[in-house]
Length: 278
Image 1 (cartoon, rainbow, N blue to C red):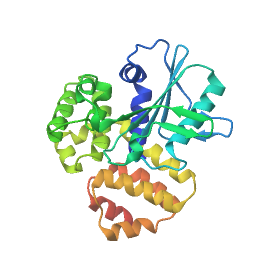
Image 2 (cartoon, rainbow, N blue to C red):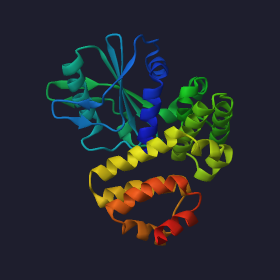
Image 3 (cartoon, helix red, strand yellow):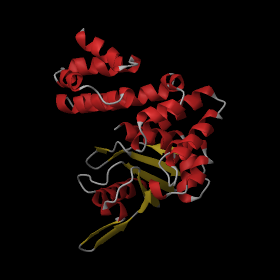
C-alpha cells in the first residue's frame, strides 16, 4: 500500500509532469479528479484521474500483475464509469512498477463476446531512465527504470534529489525515492545514499504512512491492520525479529492504531521492543 500511496502522491502533486511524460502534451487547466466512481461507488487506492481541457488521463499503478477482479476487466469498468460521468476522451495507462516475467504485464486489453477494450501499458523496468532523471517530479520512478548498472542509476537519482534547493520539496521527493527504491534495492543501500534526517522531516512521508494505516484500520479487520503496520515497520526498520512479529500480531485494533502513530519516531527495532513492553 505504501508504494501505491507514493505513486498517487506524485501523480496528483505533479499532474502536468505526468501528462507531459505519458501523453507528450502540455495540459491546460489541469485538475485532479476524485477517484470514487459511481454507479456502485468504488475507491481505487492506486488510481489517479487527471483532467485537462476535455480530456482525462487515468493512471493505474500496479506493483503486482495479479488482482481480483482481473486488471483488464477493471480497466474496462473504470472506462465505462468515467465515460458515463464525463463524456470526454479518456487515456488509460497502467504502470507496472516491479520487474516480473509474468505474461500478465504484457496484456493490454479485455476481450469478451462483442466487447474489446484496450489501454496502454508501461513496464517501468523497460523505460529509458533519462526522461525520468530530467524531471524532478519523476525521480522516484527513475529508480525502477532500465539500467545495466542499477546501483549507479540509484546514485544518479540521489544526486539529482540533492541538487533540489527547496528543502520541503527535496525532503518529500527523498521520501518517495526511499519507498519506491525498496522495490528494487536493499533498504540499507538506499538509506546510506539518502539523508535519513531529510526523509524524517518530510510531512508527505508521514502523511502517506498514516493514510495507509488508517485505510486498513477503518475496515475494522485486525488481521489486515497487522499486515499494514508490519509492512510500514519493515520499510522503516528492516526485517523484524519473529518474537516482535508475534507480539504485533496479538495487538488489538486500538493498540495497532497507537503503534501506527508511534512508529514514526522509531529509529531501531529496540524502540519498537520498548514500545511493545508498555
